[in-house]
Length: 287
Image (cartoon, rainbow, N blue to C red; front, side, top):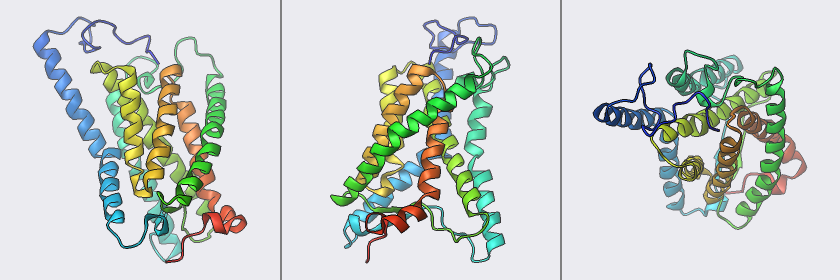
């Protein structure tokens, strides 16, 4: 987690390019700038999603229909015409990654590894095949989170604190599965590079402790899943705590991205199979 190339003085990592300590007024100005930068980045991405999700759960709770009898649908069709639907889906994928491009721009370093502050790129002495080991760690992390997560979703839905989540409602075309794989990748990159990689780096520079950073990141992750109900919130907070600990332990974002990508691929593309095999568990409630 600790970047060996990062400055380690009491100024919280805020220095000029010559690595000389900054004067106190300038240091305070940079801290304020970092805080506003975090506000802007989150407002353009998952912070906005969290606000919408809070409003959504309040709206759901105010309905006459019980929470467990409501449905949240992801990955819906954008047009009745297949080719236009495909174009819309691809545009959603491309423009949806704009916040990721923003944090890459903000954290890019002139020296290698260029994306070390995001936990990406081979660190010094990392070895040629480190990416393969990290991907394998992501597979194990996905299994660790995925199986208990599915059980908790069914439990939360059963006790009435979660809506029925429909991960995909696209018509069956030749491009449906590839598009769902891309949408899963978008979600993985957005959440892990912003809520973990970016936020951990900025909080470290602001002097926020590791425990507070992990908890804040986990609560943010849970908050933008509140549209699913309180089960979605709690399950994702736990996932955020595990992922935050893993990032703190390893300092690498690739395992988190791989794990999240696998989880969402299984969720998005596997939903049709789950409906066919266990319709009583995964089917939408009759309203």
